[in-house]
Length: 304
Image 1 (cartoon, one colour):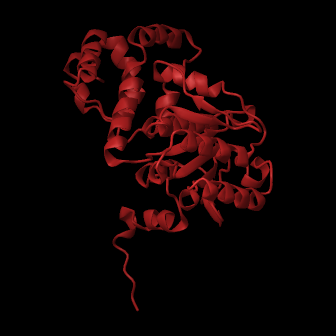
Image 2 (cartoon, rainbow, N blue to C red; image 1 turned 60 degrees about the horizontal axis):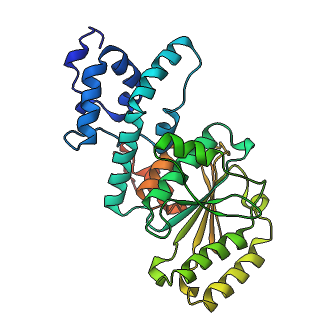
Image 3 (cartoon, rainbow, N blue to C red; image 1 turned 90 degrees about the vertical axis):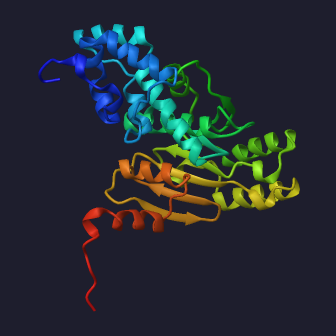
């Protein structure tokens, strides 16, 4: 790149983060060959890297800048339909599907005004990702963060339009979790689903604390939820809530546990990776093991 020898760049070997950073340069200086590479990826004749790229970074790369150069590059992006982001997203989804990650899960996405910034990007990205990894009848669906929560089909024919759709979904300042569980139960009963097809985890992405976000006391709600699910034959598979406060910026995530719900406060790239690599199951032991398994700790020994 420094020598301006764009025609020699091996695009199939460009790391995912570098692809995100430099794709506009590739479009500007080597549009024809870069376009040919993207076409080959779409046809399955070449591969694009996505391993180190996090979901919300892909979403962020679809946003347009304000300068004249940004507007010039936007016209190039529009011509190519945001294909780099689309193809990286598809690669990530395909890889996670092969691992069976986040199957039969559901997301409740808070997209209220207070979520602006990284929390909004993470909420939208993980919400769409969870919806695409689930199986029917949950596939392609989210639940709105509302006093009157709705099971919402994610509309759009590409990642950018899906992102805009989710960002524009209605959100309240809190949600009625009992109604969220009622709606999930209705779908299961109407579809005569087997217990193993029930939603196993309900992820709530917000910038609030759990007690603030819940319309009613959780202990009361949970007892009622378990009774309803037991009556319909799903008492052994009541979904667990994983409530993630994305706004809290403390250095170390705080985990707490109530009956039927895991509470997580804090956000970092490592937490996103743990979330994706552990099927959404995040607990204090997993966080601790991930922290002490880093390379810099491997040479430490305990002398007794």
